[in-house]
Length: 243
Ligand SMILES: [Zn+2]
Image (tube, rainbow, N blue to C red; front, side):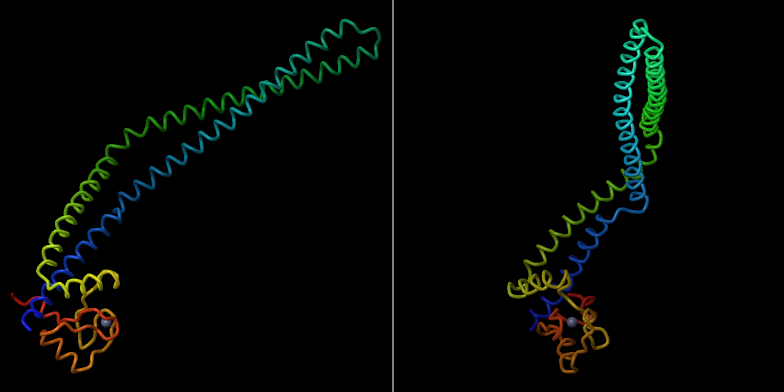
């Protein structure tokens, strides 16, 4: 009878330790607002840079095509200029002049586009470089935020290890049958093996205990489980009771 009471108190303590581990894990997985903002900002900045680099690539591809078109127009122009010297009548002359006009226009258009593209690429490249250079300035305050969060995560990891050792020590003190019962419940009931009874009901599933069962829980001389959720029941007073 006494051993059941002792085990109940150990299990309450064990549940508290597992709750603290769960809290620490939850905190580790939830970066504070300033850290999250920082992560989002870095991501946004990286996306902008990626987008700009993609634009440079697209413009370079167009530049290659424009350069090729310029080259072709230049060759055509040379060809028709030679032809001009060889014409024998006015009709041929007019045709050659038209071709020369056409090739000149094409060459000028390609040349203008070439200049535009070069300016745009230069501007983008300079912008990318200055954005990359701007990072170290801004980063002093950011680094502090990141370092504080890293230190906190490290603290939590250490706390989790400490608490895990504590759970093993407490588990060793339990009778094997109660230990495996507790661990099975912990696993199957989302980390909650124990349920305090509050105002005659299981506080986790809100199932109302029959008076007779309430009395047995109050006596704490045996392990009583909730008829509905099967968690181990106890009265909150028992948690504060001295050993
Ligand atoms: Zn219940």
